[in-house]
Length: 295
Figure (cartoon, rainbow, N blue to C red):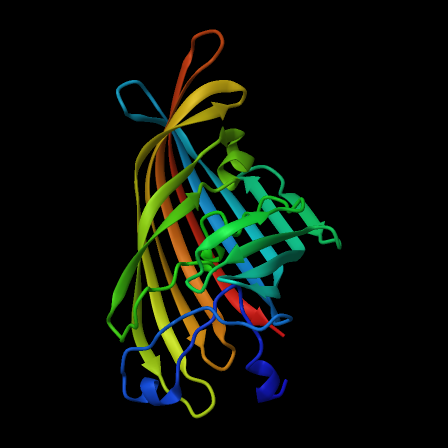
């Protein structure tokens, strides 16, 4: 792909307005969305999660052996700018493929493969700082990669001021609880957590045709008690957790070109069967994700 074409490619829904001179001098840069209609890019996101599940007694002691679950996911996603409106941009998000595998240790892998169709796309409108103005879905499947993975940061809100290396800004995000917990243990959790995340511009590497900006994102999830369903019975889950991500921004690509994240959740499940028998368990969930641009 020629440099003139690369400069028009957009990853996700993020754009930056910077200049080589300001980068070279490490001066504050303004990062804003600004893409032309028709710009598009395809990305591949992979994820791997592990879960440890301990039964515990009423005294809070672990009993029996722990059960461990695993999952993997691989998704191909295309983001395309459809139009520029007054104060916003309409972006189409289309999954062309999504493959997941999950199992509890000792059981067979369960696989799910999904291929996109023309009608299976979502549209979202964002402003110059990537704040969503609304969106509509077209039957997209639940995304196990986005639930707690690097895809969660595709729409991270951009700063409202020019920033230099070392500067940080805070955004409020909705953390979607990993659907894999339910797939692995027949537990349905029907909520998400709203928590602040801190974004930091770590450094800038200046190159003649393509400068790179390195970001980190840190998020601590607040303690929360959420309603759940445990194998058909009413339950509650108490959760705490954190997430960290690193992202590389390219001025040549005008978007993120790679990234990685890891999320950790610790939860306590409490439920009671129809016969009144209590059940308690401790859940430890770790999800690692990686993102790359695919030509």
